[in-house]
Length: 621
Ligand code: M6R
Image (cartoon, rainbow, N blue to C red; front, side, top):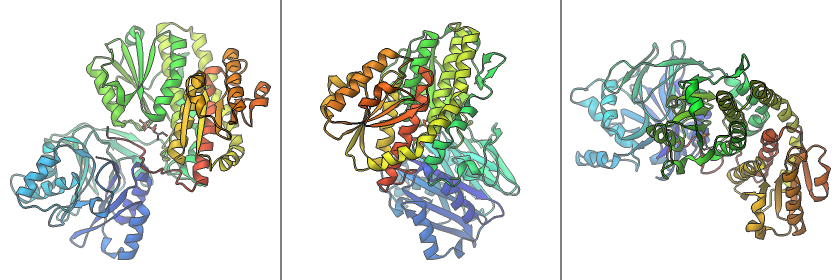
């Protein structure tokens, strides 16, 4: 099982360079191993190496790159969930003759039976992977039978035999002018250049060369050549495709002078918010991007579920407060991985909001499928144009955060909160629970948030200094109430995933029901304060909570509204954020927590963009 980055190229440039550049931009998808195959000198030049792409490049320097002088090739960067990340399990995998190579993302669920069949036919496997079966099957199909000598037909036949979710890219030394790629569930896009064509898991791999792209659909296969591409289904019938132009350029996928992507992405949050809101308030009304639901369908909604994972789930927890307040609809927020296994009560009047940056998270995708089977309507909030989750949904609202390369979600998270709020306003508008002028006012308040976030970024140096001071802490607790509670959860998640530090987020009111026993002298506790003006009652309760933990020796780090003097006696460290309406506070109070986690990780010597054991998109359950 794996989540991987895949790239394939046929054109006029040195394929090795194009593929390595592409892999560099896809490494966020996995970094357990990397490999390349180039058609050169009538054969296949292949190199693979466990570990990061840098290991593969070092290996190529060692063996020399002369043997890779071809203009068609492919590469792979892997995230393994089982099967050791060692050289022999790295992709590309070859058949016995070494003339067929395959890279694969996903899982071939029936590989045990297929492997037994191949072994019974005398084929010896060189790896422990399911992926290698595809290389042997394609080689056999190309060598004999109806599909002999026809690589696309051979791959189609093999795809029809495979079960599970997969993207395959296949090359054969006898077919130096084409590459074949196939998709079932796992993502695959085609890039269309001048005299060159690309395939990749993500447009970032080829954005340097072209912004013209085509997203492959479910059970489709593409043949790429220098001249272009042809898409068919697994039975060889011409398949419909949806071309699109990528609306960001190479600079968005590069660090632009920042030490790491995450810091750049934190800085891009004002723009991400502004871009997400743009064009969604037209003629005094909130509009979605794609709506295959009628206004009546929205009016009929009687319950909302938000399903998502990780940070996207936290964005849903934030949105619950706003959507319930604005629409008076009950909102449940559920981890996508739990949702479909507990028999949730769904019907055609249930709106399921599926939030996903990548649009390909398997848990969320399966939750969407389950909801639709139960006749619920699904609205996707997604950052990736044409990804599987929006494709399978009844309505879509895209976040326009641009590519997020750092594995830890930052700008996508803030954009998700904004988009979820637009969903809430769209529902309030359809149901008439808010007057048009109220909807307009809420929207304009959202529009002021990019500037508020820009002001928060002014605290970066100060928070980084604090991060360096905290880098030796054994654990950090995060507390919040109301919309500050999901912010506390998000702050703890950032710290866990980046700094490998024990971190927990709690609803501050729960402290006295157990977690207060964790407080010991010197323990850093980050407290997300509500506005003293917005929800005075919550504010005073949280002040009491801080004084309780301070009395027990905790080191209090307080995120509070500018000018909030009541917290001063209880704050060992104070980080001020601008005053904003209560429901919008997460958009400002999350930002210092992102900076803090990144700096603690950096000071501890960890790779901020590529935390251990993680991958950006988790396309397996
Ligand atoms: O692509 P998605 O938004 O569906 O991803 C969901 C989570 O995997 C993601 O938010 C993850 O928790 C991040 N690493 C958190 O920083």
